[in-house]
Image (tube, rainbow, N blue to C red; front, side, top):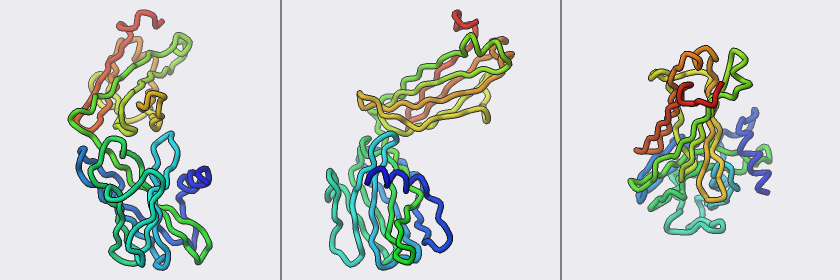
Length: 241
């Protein structure tokens, strides 16, 4: 069942004739203790309720709740309950997920879906990303790796930045000689580690000639108000040839 849900969430493109489920806002950034509000419009569907799911990158999809406008209260999935999680409706097709007193563990992507009886299929929204931070949240811990010796024998090479953090979302960027880099960057989604932290990998493709000129590259990771930076250049990597 969960495998099917993950497949459905990934394939969000709607075919002709299927209602379009819309979620907003795309991103919610809050401080610990605040209240999150996420809206879901079911399009042309008015006779079916809404289901909400929580997806932590690299983790298992969790069913949060089901609610229909004709009901007085939601039906909850395992581990979710009122009053922290609730759902309201503004019309027969407009619903709102409310998460009270948010904490770092609530950080995830929340998806809504509904049943479209006209095509006998489930339709998902595009998801809302919830990012929860606090003043006590530790900054990301960065490790930057230089190009391999084998790579440096060619014209191109790759720098690798690993970020370890306590929540699954962060903004990763690169600088070259102090200027923002806009191309050649590939960043993974977060992967949860056995110690419950999350790791993000970011790769920067560079020219071997720039590396040999001792250009300084910077990996920068922002997590709410916390920002970590790590520099790397050839002269600081004596083992790189």
